[in-house]
Image (tube, rainbow, N blue to C red; front, side, top):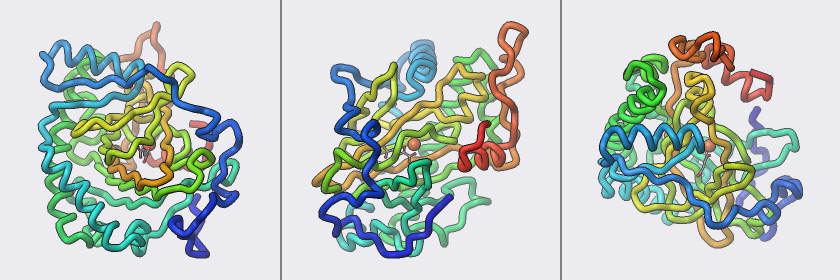
Length: 321
Ligand SMILES: O=C(O)CCC(=O)C(=O)O
Ligand SMILES: [Fe+2]
């Protein structure tokens, strides 16, 4: 699925977008602009519990996407996460290609490439972490990321409980279906270098995440768009907010009540966009299917049960699920 980079493509040196990055006319940002006057749900975790459950359940069902504020992760920690990367890039712009890891170009039907470098490593559980795969620079990366993992795990547990409650199932149902403490948290740092013709290219093409949930913090450069009611809606930066995506595994577990959200990201002419995405995924051998307690004669399963490994294989190879 991945094309090895043969020649060293350097985004920074390109004066115009090479043909392999130029999107078909119907995908180009210039022809598929975000709708005006619509904004994504922003939900404060300090709401009274019953309202919180209601708002999150609605957002996960109608949008498959929302922002959360008042989540208790300190702004300083988020800034440290962001600052580290900025410094690494300022000192060494080629750090964007994350020495040793290169750019993984995903092959799609049109063989088009995405305007992005990314870095990927497992953040949790400890038994699956290989610190050799973590960025070695800046030296503070490990400590900051470990602190972020602790805080985000707390928010993750709260979200999974609320989403379970919204389904009317036992509070621990979603977490235990996803492997409890064996659930993986995968960190993906997306770096979108400035692009000479952002109207022709995409940073990440339209997709749904394979995860159960994805938590993302971007820097202040806009770019993320969410598909809702046949339009793209811009999900712009809100200071210290966490962006939450419902992914494929939660759609399956909820038997379609929660929507795996289609999204994409655009690139910017002058500025580097960076986002830190954390994917919550079950261990590969975990069988994921609609929660049995949601199934009745009136509501039969809409998805077949399969291991996450099989789901992933099918998705990466564009086979039907
Ligand atoms: O950078 C973003 O805002 C989105 C990235 C994304 O969708 C992904 O990494 O799956
Ligand atoms: Fe995504």
